[in-house]
Image 1 (cartoon, one colour):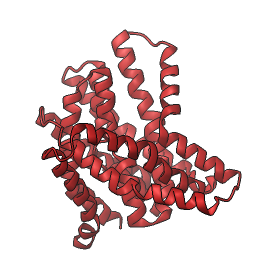
Image 2 (cartoon, one colour):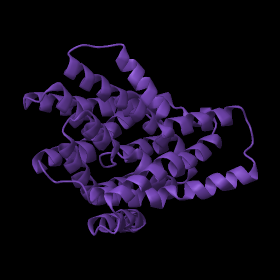
Image 3 (cartoon, one colour):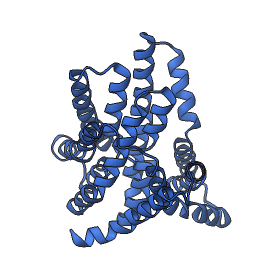
Image 4 (cartoon, one colour):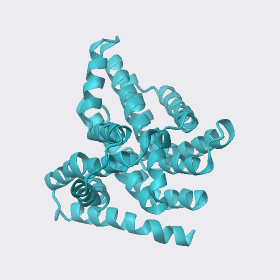
Length: 307
């Protein structure tokens, strides 16, 4: 456990440094927003494109892995939804809580961390998890919030979802990179160096941005945040592990990667969605703060186990 903690500690130390910068106002909320935008649209996209362009689609796609991750995630999503309805939540708030229970920070934290800890072979499984989260569950929350608010399903929802996916730089970078790879076009050295330098900023930039953004998060509704963190950090990896190992017999390395992704703390983009729709943003804020703090121990334990 200690050797793994020493390997993961630098990642959490960068998050801590960002938190200190945000808490002391050395890094203002506006500065954090611009840093996040730089990482999201440029650095992380460059990293994802470069990774994808050097992979073959056959190396990336694994139907068993996707099915195992989907089954485990859907099961925990169902548990969180059921508990929410028993507590009397409306559809919109329940959708946001269920999203917190299963969607982890696979982009800003998972991809840089697992690629560095486990090597390039980790990239394919993590990208599949990221694509599943963005395409399936990000679409689902928009549908549920819209239906819960309007009381009906409108064709305009699918336009909103489609535009949202097309505008998401991680989806675009992934699609362009795999297309580039499929066409078997070699990446010219100057372009490869450019992508490598820009993508190199993704890991420190993303981790620092996570920490700085946590400084503005509130800890209201701490009991709910604790329950959602338990779902995300304990139930989610447990059910994904059960699904991958016993139900779908995913090959060991791929299973290890999706279990690690499932152990990531609550994703920051859920807060942006909650704020955009005006549905329980403070609740999401608390869940992000609590789950990220606890993940220092839980994520390290999961990585030690899969290692």
